[in-house]
Each structure stands twice: as C-alpha cells, then as structure tokens.
Image (cartoon, rainbow, N blue to C red; front, side, top):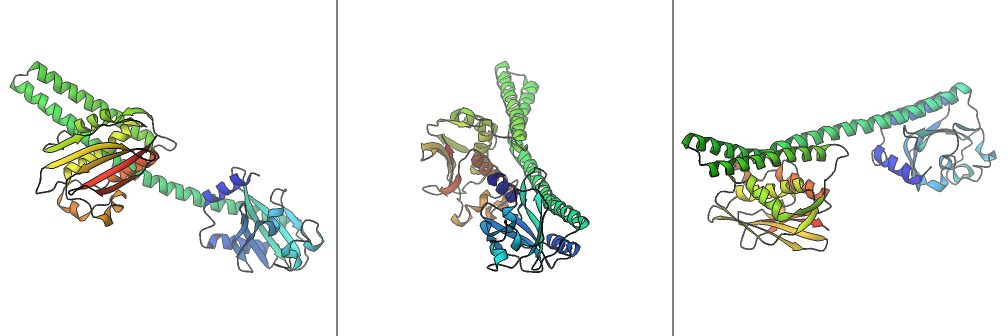
Length: 385
C-alpha cells in the first residue's frame, strides 16, 4: 500500500488531532469484551507512527511505526490471530513482546479498510498471556473493524455536508452582492431609454443607451455562468490572457451610477493570465468600496495602478477616503465582517472584500491593505505570472 495514499486518507478523515471519541472508545471496549481480552485498541498508522486513537484497558499512546506490531502486518491478509506472540517469528523480537514496551502474548487484529480500499490502521485485541479466539469471535472482530470505518466515514460526510452548506450560503451572498452592480447599470440604461422614448428619442442617443444595456446584460450573464462554475465542486478558474485595461473599463461601466462624483485615474495596466469575469468582480468590489467610503472633507478620488512584483504583478486601488485602521486590515477580508464605519452606510454586507480575497487566492496570489499617502486606503493584490 502506498504510504502517501494512506496518509492522505487519514488526513481527510481527520481523526488524529481530535480528542478521544466516545464512539470509538465504546467499540474498542466492545471488541475486548467480545474477544474476552483485557485490552483493545484502535490504531491509525501513518508513515512514521502508530496512533492509538481509542483504547480499552490501558491509556492510549503513540509509538514509532517500526515498533508497532500492527504495522508489521498491515499489508497482510486479515484477520491476524496469534496465540503466543513470543513464539511467532514476526513478533518475538518486537518491543511490545520482549518487555521493553510491553509483554504481549495473545494478539489478534483486523485491518481498517476504507471504501476506497485504503488500509489506514487496525482494530486489535491483546493479552499478556496466551489464549485463542473461536470463529465467532474472529468474525465479530472483523465486523467491529468495519463499523469503525463506517463511523469515521460518516463523520467525514457530515463535515463535508456542513462545509457544503456554508459554501452555498457564501455563494448565495456573493451572487446577490456581485450581480447588483451590473443589474443597477442595466436598469439605469433602460430607464434612460424610456425617458428618451417619451421625450422624442434621439436615434444616436437611443442606440448608445441600448448598446450599453446589452453590454451590461451580457456581462451579467457571463458573471452568472462564471460564478456558478467557480462555486461548483471541482469547478475552477477559466484563465486566459486578460487586458486589465479592458477589465477596468467594464468594471467602471457597471459602476457608472456608484462612481458619480468620483475621479477615477489609472496608470498603465498590463495583460495578465487570469479569469476575466472573476477579476472584474475583484476590481468592481474594490472600486465600489472606494466610492462608498468617501472622506467628508475632500472630493473622492481613486487611482488604479500596477507595478511589477517579486511574483508577477501587483495591482493597487488607492482611495483618499477615511482609511482603515491597521488593526482592522486583516479582519475586513473575513466573510460578512463590517467595521464601525459601516454603521451609517446602507447596503454594506461585508461580502465584497471576502469575495476579492477568495478570487485572488484562487489565482495563487495574495491581497492586503496599506495606507494611501496623504490619507485613505490602498487595497493591493498580487497576480503571479
């Protein structure tokens, strides 16, 4: 059995770092009583150690894999039943038999095999004097070993279900948040079309408004498709060479109403390998925040720029607003976190920066906040080459 596969399966089951579980300890006790032995244990065997995750009749511990009796027969057929380990060539020199770590004589074990066929450990019973098992006891040992695997895999499925529900909640929040901006732009365009029609439409103006509405609708459809793919288990980014200038143009167009009264400047922006729709969601959220949180004593201004970094490109969105206290700059990227400054502003959900963090990390990059020279917040994110 490939140790790497075993270790990966054990890590997924997440049984080693948890405190002893009552359900596993109950199965260990039942195994001892069925087999009429004073001791029993459930062992999880990694590439370098044996972890007794539940025990009956003695305190559970961890030992080196090379000292483990169960590790010696993990790749053998089960069950293993040994009347007197001191007379068995496989175990007679083992420290659990010689008296160095124990004085085991009777030993019986059954492998713990996952549904994927990975042997992750054993259920074993033992005694310090020779004894035997009858056929019914041996069969029961195998049945209990299978139930241990059922318990571990049921716990895994329960955790996965809880995580899936959390992802669905986050996904629903993100869709609601991110689609409001292009939907608002689309609604405004259509409202202006209606006004033009009622006032005697100028064909050129009407055509421009309809084109703008169609572009907003297309961007919204693309965003829906892309965010669904991103949220689906196994889904990923659709990366290609993306011109940041074009992405920024689309984000600014979607935010047309929100950016009124905001001076938006840009420096030279590169082409990067990225998911265009996801990257637009990042810029859209950062620009929206910059427009929302304005300083009361100066006209709002946002500068979008990019510079070479150690890993690729660092893109910065700098505003001249009230800024974010240094102690809060890490916390704002957590889901649904809102600062005290948000209390007087309607519509803040705490989803935007969490969305930006998730997308940037999915690209293999990092995101952070620094202070804008002269006052304000600069949100930067790195995109690797």
